[in-house]
Amino acid sequence: MTTIQWFPGHMTRARRQIQEKLKLIDIAIELLDARVPLSSRNPMIDDILMNKPRLVLLNKADLADPAVTREWIAYFAASGIEAVPIDAVTGEGVRSIPDRAKHALREKIEAQIRKGMNPRSVRALIVGIPNVGKSTLINRLAGKHVAATGDKPGVTKGQQWIKAGGDLELLDTPGILWPKFDDELVGYRLAAIGSISDLILHVEDVAFHALRSLSATYPQLLKQRYELEEVPAGEAEAHEIVDVMEKIGRKRGCLQSGGSVNLEKASMVVLRDLRGGKLGRISLERPVTVTEAKEARPTSE
Image (cartoon, rainbow, N blue to C red):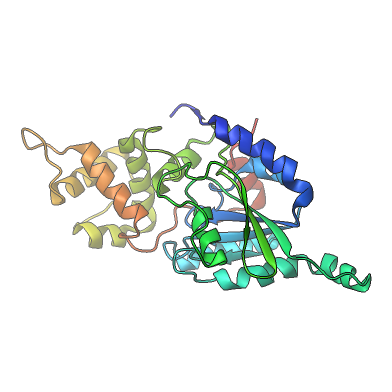
């Protein structure tokens, strides 16, 4: 896979607008996808937000492997960052967010109280890559439909302040991807969960990489979902993954003229099942050491 260039104009504007609003912000709430926490962290955000207090939310935790999510919580804790698994759709874990935000700002709030000041509402910036669930989270926190939602990247195009209860105000922003993915696996993972448009990469390539990862980590789930007798274990060869994809295609009736499997249709079956949680609760990456993690992350240069 060649380096992916992905930096639409509205994302450039979003970065500039975020930097302009920083002086109004108390805390940044960084929303990640629990299935790919490291890959869904935009390395540009650290530079943009500088030293602002941070709360990490692992959204779509209902779709992720709970054991792996616990590993990620420990991973972030080791870096001094609180990570909270949530499901913005059902509201699981969302109610604790205002209190967790205030806890992260407790020293600032206590200092205001000592000075006789009445602490105002906490002002939080919601940041995250496209399709990670920012608008759904904001609507859940606000208790009403105030932010546009959708299942395609790029739904949120502007910025708006939103009241979320009596002590939290939220600033929504468009999802921001970094200019390029130097690590092809990051690009494929994001494409697999739908954070990159299906028009950017070939669906067969995306599904191939996803299927290779799943066969190594969740072979039993693949067997159950597609009624397969065997799935290659460990680091499978390319031809073995193609064979699995063809078997899935035949099971799902993805046939074309002459009886051969239409791999594009079979690939979409796999990706739809993965994105919709029909394969079961899966995680596409696990924590690594801090040094390895930094080496694995894409650059913003």
